[in-house]
Amino acid sequence: MSSSAETHRSGFACFVGRPNAGKSTLTNALVGTKVAITSSKPQTTRHAIRGIVHRPDAQLIIVDTPGVHRPRTLLGERLNDLVYETWSEVDVVGFCVPADEKIGPGDRYIAAELAKVSERTPVVGIVTKTDLVSKDQVAEQLLALQEVMEFADLVPVSAVDEYQVDVLSDLLVQHLPEGPQLYPDGEITDEPETTLIAELIREAALEGVRDELPHSLAVGIEEMGPREGYDNLVDIYAVIYVERRSQKAIVIGRGGERLREVGAGARKHIQALLGSRIYLDLHVKIAKDWQRDPKQMQRLGF
Image 1 (cartoon, rainbow, N blue to C red):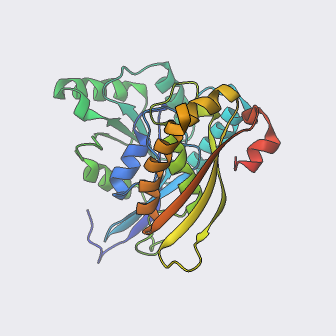
Image 2: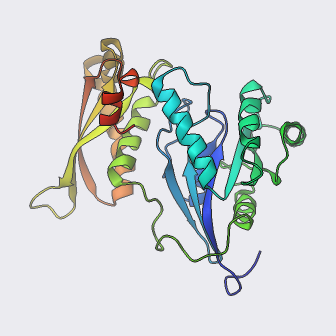
């Protein structure tokens, strides 16, 4: 690794992999703070949220893309378009495969798509979640991954144990071009605050709900600003959109209990993000079949 006196590198990386392969958790581990939402529900990331890793010798900007999948809806197609666009614009791609799941058709589908860009963009193979399996299983998974495509590098990591996260950081930085800092020190993301806040609310709303909900949930920030006469209080008015009455009932819960939990969970993370106290006003509305309606999708930011 070169010292900062010699050369400084800066550029963009993105992680790809099946939904729930640990991409967002890895982004957060590298950046050292919560910028990409993580959830046990697959398919939760919708925005290309950038996390910025500041090092003396480099600045690595991580673009977190949605998981690639064969699209079934207009939203699915848009998400995939976003992914291919991102791949062609970054300096290095990290292909994530969890250590505790066999490599399957979904992984091979992504590898085949990645192979199309790998001549221009180096691809690093990453075995994630190594804390869940034995050393032997990690070794087996590395060998299996090696068979899938030609990688520039291969590395096993655990974001939870922080195992080899710094090694991965070094590997990604090696593939960046020489250049100055692209963002000022101290910035961890270039997403507008409202986008991050909407994502944090969405994450809280997805915790512990049934599988039919993730795709049907969107969050809009209606209004946000400091409260007059208070120097450390921000008012946030947000709406959680679902597609059906039955989903609205799930999000609100009996006597509004579920929605209160969502508010409490989101509030904690938003206060950490903004560094101030917040008042969060949450409502749930039905936007019928919004994923298939281009007008509604645009209004919700897709």
